[in-house]
Picture 1 (cartoon, rainbow, N blue to C red):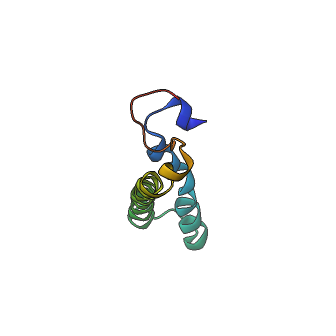
Picture 2 (picture 1 turned 90 degrees about the vertical axis):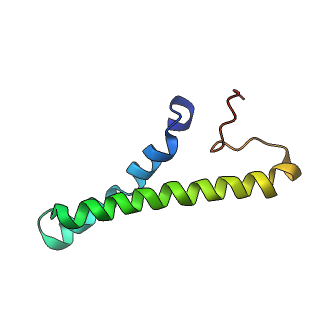
Length: 80
């Protein structure tokens, strides 16, 4: 749903998918040590954005000529 409403869907997906980094580090340590949790969270969000961008470009290059569908992660400025 976020992909339909916002152009920053990769950032919002990274923030949502990696929320466990904050919860997990505080559950293990017993407190939320921000010097550990924030770099872990930021790195995980960056990894999600980079990984999904690479995947979207591979889909566009390899599969779209075969299937003739538009990939949701590569916005071309056109609707549909």
